[in-house]
Image (cartoon, rainbow, N blue to C red; front, top):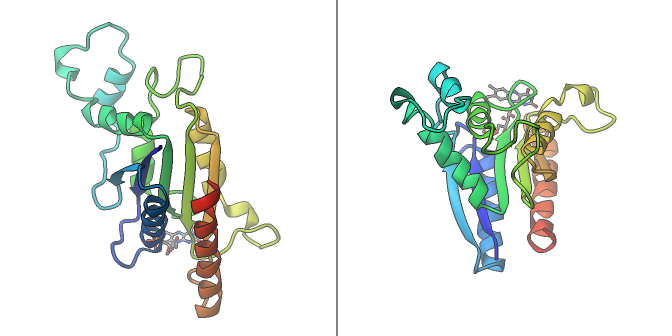
Length: 203
Ligand SMILES: Cc1cc2nc3c(=O)[nH]c(=O)nc-3n(C[C@H](O)[C@H](O)[C@H](O)COP(=O)(O)O)c2cc1C
């Protein structure tokens, strides 16, 4: 039995392809694994704040008890970290924005990657035995052999930053070429949906 953290990061609603695909995955997953539970987090529609000076002071505070003026500063970060700690599987929908991740998702990463909570001072990742599925939507294709192969800073970044906090079992499903004409879009969406179906039984 697993606990799934389902997260969307597109600022778009019903037009969002990544939202549609994570929803398709999670609803099928639950049908096949009815005892599993799901927590939902939407950083696209309900963005988390970027970290600020007080956040940094509180996160790196060395004393046992936080000074009173910093007592509540890490509340959102604590809540988000509790969600990743309590889940075994992560299903994240992340559009490619400017060759990387949307700013809302970067703000989420900055809240969750925290010393002594998700990594140690000696850089040991504390999220162990987790599985992550990233459904990434893209206007173009960055596949091997394409002109844009070196422009994909999203997958290497996400593998590095989540690997840093211990999550190394990461699968990417791309819905790509979404802005490259109807035929390319249709083909890519069909492929992504096939992979999603396969993952329901093999993940
Ligand atoms: C601000 C912005 C930046 C984008 N940057 C890229 C990009 O660098 N590369 C790319 O292939 N597509 C890019 N796109 C296209 C999106 O990845 C594509 O529209 C995707 O479907 C968005 O995900 P969503 O449908 O879940 O909202 C960008 C779209 C927006 C709105």
